[in-house]
Image (tube, rainbow, N blue to C red; front, side):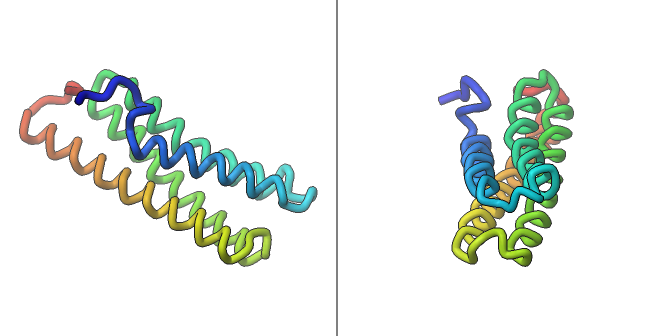
Length: 130
């Protein structure tokens, strides 16, 4: 069954779930972090799902790959920030584990999707999204 929307992509659904969890967990941060790590982590998490959505809407697979690559880069940003949060004791070990595992899953899915699109482009010899 063909996808009707970026919301049908499991990777987008997982990235969206990650963003919701990040927002929930950062509400517990010290007030001194409201414009610091909390804000940065939220923006980076939002960037993952947002770039998946924007890339999906593009008419060219090259642009789609570019936005998926940006989302993949945002995964590395979130990973770094999660580690900082854990080491600063803003997250419990169990909450870090949940967030980090979901992030790893999203990263693997993004990598697989980027690879699949690139392989399809080589097979079809086209840059147009199918």
